[in-house]
Image 1: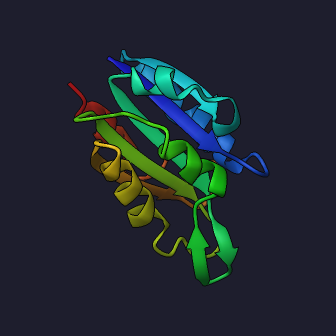
Image 2 (image 1 turned 90 degrees about the horizontal axis):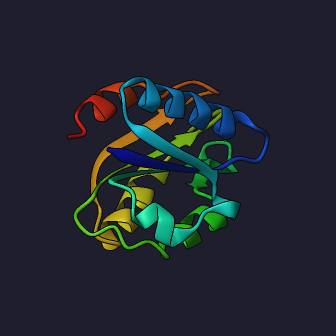
Length: 136
């Protein structure tokens, strides 16, 4: 199975988490395309068997948390009808409703969002390994 992981990272934290996630995906025997959102090709990402999109959390400490504009704009270019998908974020203080909002945007593009993960720092989010193991 080919999994595409697309991320937006400002300080390198989300990039580091995405790299560790890609290593886990590859270690489970899947192909993995890892690309920053600024360089991502929507057609190539849409052609993957499963898609995972991540963003760092913008906002004001405990309020107004949201994914980056680049992340949400990229999601709007995808065509992932019926494909398994996951969303993830990295955060410092609070993640707010960033994941449900990203998941809703992916669902609107046709994805079956089966995972929503957050990490406080550059690590593989809890539950991501189980999501990968559930891919068939």
